[in-house]
Image (cartoon, rainbow over all chains, first blue to last red; front, side, top):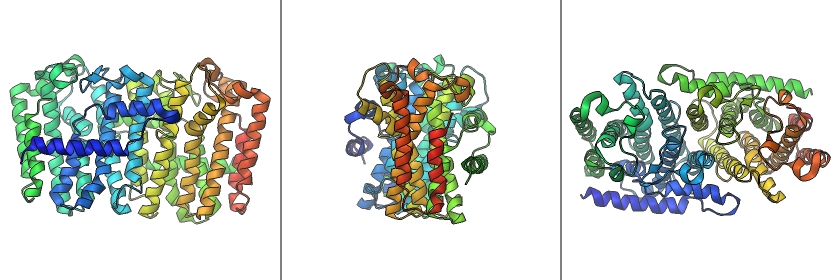
Length: 298
Length: 298
């Protein structure tokens, strides 16, 4: 399989679904919804939605499963987008560029950016609980909400971001960096795969293997992100290169140097693929995504 | 019945449940959870949780129903608390006092206040979808999540706050003020009652009547809030008095004057009580709460 084509096709499907499901900007809340839509449609790679769908594909080839998981995939992208809007705020990383475009607050102002983030997060749970978008049982949908809410919350993504900010310009042990990465980035990536597995009615064994896969590629994803922040240009990244060092953030390269970090990313990718050993060729997209994460350049 | 005693008892029950359910501050995320807990336990009146429980009581006197609805009530308070933390931010209303105490960002800093709000919102959906806190069916719990997510989102509470900020220091028609109130304050109040009704397995007819009750007291609540902002001192309110005028916000008194506004509040209370005409004395707490809202002083 050609992974670039696969990713491009899936990205297009997610894009279309987001356009169909997302609120249209009109009426009293036009400006607010415009702010939400601006960041949601600012050219994301849709990594989390694609991982969710690819995990489901590894388990089942039913078209209904894919239809059912598309709103879940879209909700994951809304949560990811909200987290970027808030991370970029002046009070946080104070970044002016994201995906090569002005960040939300530079266009809509700080207040509206905070609110657009709040609404994207809330709307994700609206979508996950909407009755007209899925034929999954209520029990499965409730499990998916629980998985995503846990991963995105205080002992997950937001907790990781809080710790990240608290540790800026401070020395801290490697264990703390692991905790930051595991929560800030890893938790939602694993949840995307976990939700895909649960939504495709995977066995407990399959679910556990896919969670392990998620943990490894979440780790690899963040290590590569740290690397790119050091080794790429702002133009290549579409966001400010070198910002980690500027903000005094600890990263893998800061702990281990560039070469050793690259090895660690490769190791994580290898472990990720090993977790899929019992899956048949329906898991090939997941295997290829793992390699793709290692080789990505933005 | 003595409404003051009723509210105090219910407030104590909600307080106890929040203490039991809420995360403890420890480990890596200690500081973050501390920031969440600070605002959650800063002495709120617990209006939304009490309305949720009182709506359920109006329908059913089963103890199991009350146990099942307590986590829903707590989730509503988390969402309300997050909205206050974000509203108070420098980029929004820039308020230093809330419930007579320093606002979250003045103690924990702006970044952490944004994140504490994000986590309270996310954690509310964690609680609503948790499998170990309720014997309600998955279908009912999913409906409750849908009701609350809709009310708290872009075409609800956050949309209302966005419109409120966009209208500061501008002239706009009364219809816009109504839309701000209905969404910023009314939506979550109605959702609290709606969730209580659905969680107590009310009939469609009862649910509709309780939604109407919620709409009227939500309106009354906001009108009285506008009045108090004009007529009370900061000490009485526990938040900055006169802040509406200072921020150039349109309010009921600004449109109608104090006396006419008082009449409108009274009228809304009367309509609220009329919606309960088919309910027996189990709805007395709701009737009394309506009167209490009219007479409250903070």
